[in-house]
Image (cartoon, rainbow, N blue to C red):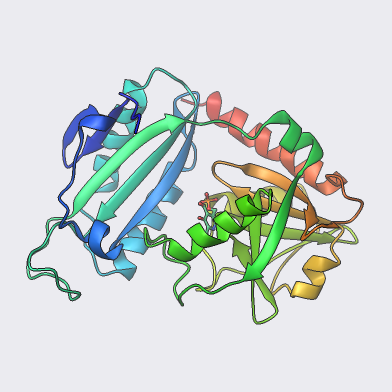
Length: 289
Ligand SMILES: Cc1ncc(COP(=O)(O)O)c(C=O)c1O
């Protein structure tokens, strides 16, 4: 395994990523007992950091793990990591697990020293081709647990979902539960029909993306018709447009689902509008230290 020498963070120490190690008894390793965040950074300015830290706090509360850091401390860790990298646009990954414990036992250990890990990668925006021509997706039933609103590191079902896309030569997997749209393997989804944007309301069946919130804000700010409500599988399959959103993919048009064209099979006009608005928001962050 070729690990880059980029500066990373583990439990108070900054060191090259490949030099950092955690115990095999870490509950993140043994149980997937932890939560995480991924924060995009444009021109060394974290995008929506406060919102990511709020979601991290909510995820930690949901798994009854005390937040090991104040927002000021998290902000400082992120700032130090950002400053240590040789590239300007970054993807900051933060992870907190319930830490190492022995003997191995499902229930929480009596005393907990959480493991706090963070590292930075270059943020690579989607390829121009993907933006201009759109991407394809497949669909599967959503087999995940009942707290998909928690950004948990136990991502096995999401891993299998994403692999289903890769195996089919697609970019994302759309998930349906009992005939209703939930989200993508690692993204939120929006449909457009007759000029109206529709997206599922936040619930325990999906992770409320920070990018999802940005899209809703932008749609409202620009007066685009928007409905936040349950979206049926039938509506998705008959949509004029379908988009995925996430911090790393920003906003991408899905132009084919399970081999069938979505709408005209090309990125639609409302997608192009929203793409432009998102780029403006990211650009504004670049210009605001
Ligand atoms: C399951 C899932 N839903 C939605 C998202 C989008 O969240 P965000 O916009 O905060 O990146 C992600 C991001 O990785 C995800 O893993």
